[in-house]
Length: 432
Image 1 (cartoon, rainbow, N blue to C red):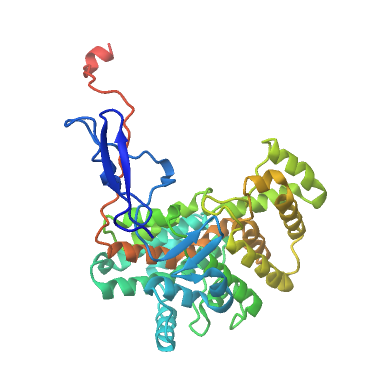
Image 2: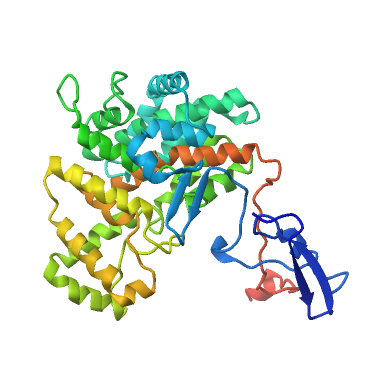
């Protein structure tokens, strides 16, 4: 960590003037760069950074990533330990509250979430109004946004107790909304929550229960899905977290902010990557076709999906955990024939100099799609599952934003490239 005395000396070659720019925590303030100008009446320098490739928008203590070393930590705890020893609801508590719960705190947390899984009956009517073939992710995005109208007090974001209850409500209701969007697409009746079941068991019940009095899920499936939720719970300032923070910076209610995050996750470049992996594996078909596919990638005729990451320049730590979860799921469902293709593709890519040189390692999406397909989820449900897991992270980011005195409404600069000083020509002249 840098000290306040660290600085950067910048020489403006336009004027010959030098500026001392403080460095704090390995960063410089954009406002300090804005003080560099060529003349009194000229605008200060701005930083041009499409996609925020090297721009920090906030200080955060939620998630730490070291992409070069393949490290992911929630509140300082390695993802490997949490995935193996914790539960999704405990991880959700950790992300939101900043520390692991005591037994009493955890029991109260689980109780509160369990008894807020039900939604207002009018929400059911709202969801039933969608077309029979509505995309589940679109239904989830709209229904989460609609919750702001059922809880108008959620706009009072300055009240800590009010923030806390909205967070509980959203984590609790997300599986209900996600499961109902799944049932809607199948033309099946919606299943109400069962408060006797755990969080993940309840979700599976609302997804798959038919006429049986109580749905009983295989413990291995429950554990695997719970682990997937943990792995997706947060990932620093990704596109959807940035969307939640940007919309949240207007001081809107958390339902509207999270709805924006769901919209960002809906995009194929963010949440849809595991579906793309599945399509790629099906197109390859069998192991004998892998060498030809690899050559196609090298020649620019094919795309290798599920490898490489904007942040990780090493093996994505989540991918190793998901690989093990695959084994547990396939014990129950039987082995997906595409697993052999995936494993062979991974083996070849990790040994091929072309991919090694480019640091293209498997990421979290490479194996997760295989698990989702084994559990009989259609591809359009993959991002819904991602959103349920990511909800605590979005809320932790939103909560941190609301209490950060340095934060302002998101309003990035632009570099204007259009015309200026034009004279308006009246319509009678232009249309003559």
